[in-house]
Length: 407
Image (cartoon, rainbow, N blue to C red; front, side):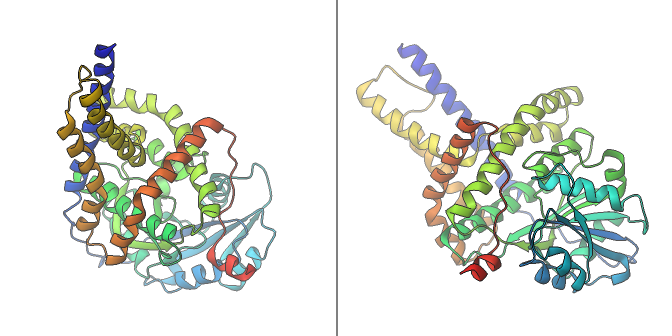
């Protein structure tokens, strides 16, 4: 019994050590900020800006007004909004504020992917002929130089780009502030590090850019509740790497209350579980056949347990090892009490290290004090997904503007 317990403890500690080493490797790789490429090339890329919207009349005026401020010739981009099964004034708002509206009331419904697929089929085969498609959320406030910055990368031969998504409302609540910290670290520790290492970055739903050749060849392959990330893996299996472009910035809202954030997180975690079931084996086969570090990294990124799980597991491991050293000294793992405490501290310091690397403002450090509660909440969400299986429906996240109107 003691031998079996020791082997299990050693296995858990080995997984924690491997995951920690990989995360710290990515953190160190994210330190370097590559130079921004020159955007002085002639303006010639024609963009279709795509915005899927379901009852988004409250936020679209600001989004469309901000897009009109692009430092890019207005004749070279069109804004297309799909009003997907809307019962509010979304379509009228788009018509009044300079966008091209496409009203959709056909099936299937209930997922962003369906609206994106439908709209791409409408605009890619007609006139005008576009060179690239940019996908934003309905509440995206886009930096005026976004199109100019991504055009420079497209002209340099890149096919799939991910801009920097920034949370616009960290001041709304402690939960929104923690979500903003989480997004900063995703941008820096995940996407910036992978760009520096020549790996493929994660698509994040907002500020995604695709050469039309990719979309015409493969369509929109993703239909899960996390269609953005899923599409990134599908493209990775087909030989495309997603390039992170931090200078192309877009700001969007985070849910500021648990009642709004919980359905959103349930949706994301359920989509992750579905992706793991469907894509782990193809990524594994592709990685071994091609011996591609890019595919191996994609597989690790998909299958590695969440930070919440790893952090809490490292805490439980430290407590368990210390208890065993007193009550069951015959149970021993790879690490003793001191080593297990160091392991836990290293996991605890990971977020703080990320903020230091990112040169984050003071409010981000204050928000991180909520970190332990935030991680426990996220782990509970993951447990609910495992218990409920596929019985999770898409629920639209309400925006700050409409909540304020209602109150």
